[in-house]
Length: 383
Image 1 (cartoon, rainbow, N blue to C red):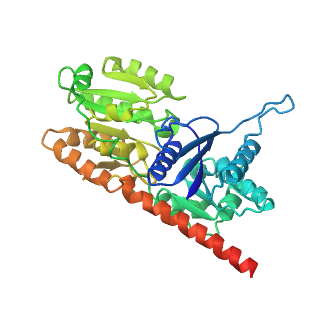
Image 2: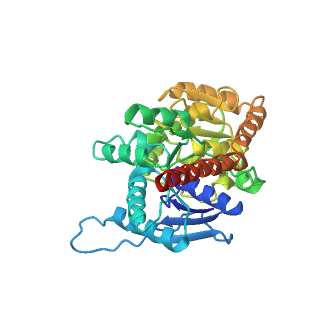
Image 3: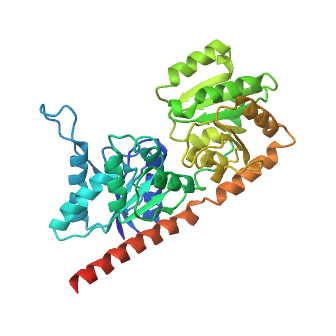
């Protein structure tokens, strides 16, 4: 099968999932064509079935804002025609689903009926999509897709709750590549950060307000008053300066390191003892799954899709949004020497349930059903 994948080429969850899915499909014998405005960070070309097509966005004095959606539509049309692509799979509804619909309409004028699968990842529905400026187009694009998937049952339910959706949405959860995300021997790294045997807490995110990084810092601050710990903050974004100032005001900068954006985040997770995810909303919690794969238990909020991933009292604990005292209590329990080894083992066992070899067939089966439906529709029209 020849598949066109459209995504944001970023470190964010949707871009990571799309890239890893494409690489796995290529290894499984499918020909995969990535269509983005720049090469995704995790994309490599060590597989003969992986191709990259850059979206060219021309600039003209007439345009205050470059018409990216039109450029993306044209790129999809050209890739489908020139590479004989069977199916387009777009990740993140805005603007990819609407651009894919336009591409499909253009392709029909060229005698091609190319199906579109849309995967909803979270904020494209729960935040941006609900904005009155986008809602009608998001609703239309989802309904006009030939197949729709969501990364959690919670996101599926939110989509039906907030949009007038007339079609089925299949839940296909996010996944992990355990050949990459696994605990590695990084004793020298751990010693450099925790020279006196301190426990190591990690948080990774895009440093936006919805991630509530201040809750992670305050949890660390109170845990630190009971046991020796260090904190690594991985990522970057608009909240970074404010969080750095908070750490200075709390007097904990000597025990906190800001590492910025990292591609090889598994190297950091390999030395961690606890992962904090105090987010205001997470449709799945991919960063938490990556931590679990590296045998790191998780303290998270109980919002969105997180309860579908983080098992209370088994892989870590779930707290109400903003309940820092509860997160502190749970963190201290998990980090106790009598409890930590079992939580680490449980985290890995849970991650194995989301191994990519288990999830990839779900996407392949979804593609096959969509293609079969399109073929059946064409036969009815011909008859």
